Length: 245
Image (cartoon, rainbow, N blue to C red; front, top):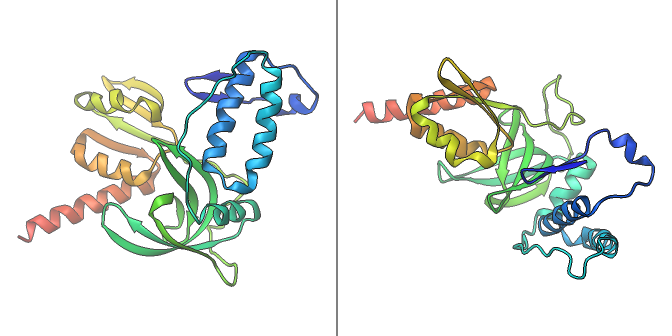
């Protein structure tokens, strides 16, 4: 287990089946993670998280353990989404799209809850899009369990994979400020023929689509193909809209 650049990574978890002694840095990193976890999870898990925090604080051997200030997430659908993740239950949500300022109904299979930039996001399989999509929690205006509990996924799709698709961009050197301004969501940068190939960590795809459109041809999506197709489709729609005037 190691802590680097704001992330706690646990590798070879089978070695943790036996008790082990953690050093102060490791315990502090876990305390930070638990504090964040407590802020984005429903009250049902508060007792378990608090018990773990107390156990760690008792063993960290300092008078005043690290205190992390956070903003509590207040959302009436959080508990329902957590249960849906635990039981692989599909949900029907009414979602307010930021870029189109319109509501849409989506049948989703929630996979993961995470925070980024003080916002909480849901990674889910979306039946309408036939792929993984990211939804901002505060834009979900209605959420219900699908009565028959059925949702259609691709034959090759498995809930057990529960992995983010890597997003790879080709960034023109003239758009290097994109890389400089978004270090927190970039997991790797390499240079090819004087240009940058950038791999992103988990992000709000709607934000990326709008950002890429703003950079024009200076940012191109190399993977996944569906994201490149979505950006191309929206760019084409924008061109048609202005051409018709």
